[in-house]
Length: 581
Ligand SMILES: Cc1cc2nc3c(=O)[nH]c(=O)nc-3n(C[C@H](O)[C@H](O)[C@H](O)COP(=O)(O)OP(=O)(O)OC[C@H]3O[C@@H](n4cnc5c(N)ncnc54)[C@H](O)[C@@H]3O)c2cc1C
Image (tube, rainbow, N blue to C red; front, side, top):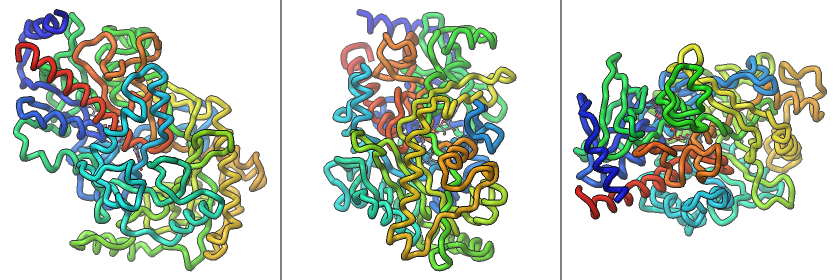
């Protein structure tokens, strides 16, 4: 029958196997790729190659308070977006888009917040024609990975306790962080588990950590098995440049570059691309899978004409609303004290103190800006600001952004639009297709995206009247930010100006390899995450999201990996039981 015929076709493939043969090749050891490599190698008969472009994960990633300092470092791809004239104006129309480039991928440099999104998000994916992705279908896969350390304190029916990924509250929460959550609560938002039955809530977010140290996907899923499972082969600093596809449209391996040398590796079963929203799309296009016109313009032979790179979107946010803390509440310290605290942290056996937390970053709220909404359209998360004077004089600078999150004298409470309507596209770089792609994210391209942000601002301003703020002497700084000084502080014009000038990513880029039914012209993947028209090739990572979920995207990327690889394992078990393996 058809399945057996396909297997025989694969046996007949030309023998170009000069550098190793594996059952599966996984491209990218990020949040999704690490889960996938772990699950596949549970079967000792399957030989798995995991290729990661970045280096091994450095120790510094484990320090929560230093998370911000990892951006713009050698373990960040350091992408920037393309201008659209409507957003990111204060930085020349380009917003910075950090992405992890190390074992663990973005889970090694991210803000560690463990958030799943809203049940309705997954039900919507299913309603769009993607069988197997409703909330009911995906919940078991969230639970599978999760080892919740505070299960009794959260909505326990919705949490797992036996998975590989530790999740829990940071041991250290400072006073301004508590202030924010208390203020949200005073404004009517209940304290409850946002990953439980009802998402509208405020609390300190749970994090991918244990005992005050980050646990990336690499630490949770790869480190424990790396030297135990002899069927797992890992190559770091190995960048995949092409998926090998034969004339019958079978993917049979990859080409990758390590130490300046190009290698080929072959997969007897499948190639699984988990290089993230930006690089999965880029790799597919480099391999001839993408929009015909675009690939032809770059002289890349087209193997499949698919809408790869389209549907790029992110939760848009902005900076520039600033809360000043009183001297009593400020956690700012001198440079000397900060360096000494990092040294002390390094020596501690059991980690303690401000660096075991992320300052105000985990103080979050999910809310509906209109009572008739059935799910939240806004999330607030806060960023610490080291030096208010510097911020007001120079705007956002590296010193302010990448300073340890634990030490700060001000807070930027960001509102994030959870339901963005704007869509952009990713294109290969016309000067160098292998270089950084052109990220036309098109923030605020659809004016309706301004609405939740503007409503969110008014909610934020109302916090100033809460007891939580008053008791700590916290207040909004009324001095205007550079680029918006022409508008009176507090007016709609001023906040619109901030949104356009200081537009910001929330790091939740998704959608470039959209999952959808065959009739959906923008779909790149079917509901089992197989690339349309190419056999033995899947994309399993955050790029598959047809619509971004209402929340942070790391836990969803891991769930996507669990859900996706379950399809793979079951399919191959079925074939093995029925046919010639
Ligand atoms: C600064 C920052 C803060 C964030 N904060 C949070 C947060 O607090 N909570 C949350 O839930 N989410 C957060 N996110 C988002 C979250 O981390 C991502 O959504 C998630 O990691 C996506 O998983 P992924 O597997 O799709 O991609 P990634 O985790 O990015 O992994 C992709 C991997 O593929 C590798 N790769 C790429 N191209 C190639 C190639 N050609 N060959 C080989 N390897 C390749 C990359 O180096 C990387 O290791 C944040 C992200 C960033 C960058």
